[in-house]
Length: 209
Image (cartoon, rainbow, N blue to C red; front, side):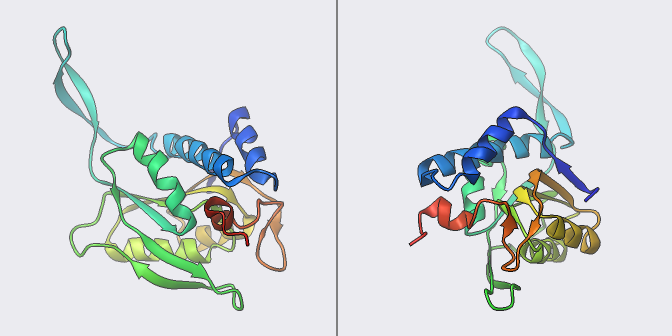
């Protein structure tokens, strides 16, 4: 768990409370996911390299700042899609490359069904987006694909993480940074995070029926 950077802020706690409440409607749930995604991206991007950029203000010329290198957002479908727009609001020049993974309910292992990664040069830093880091199966598979693509710097952004998922990512990809809003108690026998918030994808997309 030492490799996980966990946020400590009252606004984070309030949005987490909103996500956990089973009475929270999908619209309010999506809002809190978006706000927490922005905060995660803000802290995860603190060490991004920058370069000077000459600009003109209405008054005079000056040296501004621009992000150096290519940033890739890698949402793990489907729940990770909800984190893309808020992060793009902070990093509008980022590229978005999708990965389709789902958990087999019988084996609890990740199943890879879709990948939209180019054959061209990889991005300089990849932000893997997934609201929940539970067993770590999908996260490690995504990290593996980033390494195969040739990405040298990988960061995993999750709103809620379980100790088991953090341990798995740390053991298989010790150089990957994990950024989470909170680390919960454990996984239950069904591999759901406790206390957690239920199925993030179903609550985001209102498919609880």
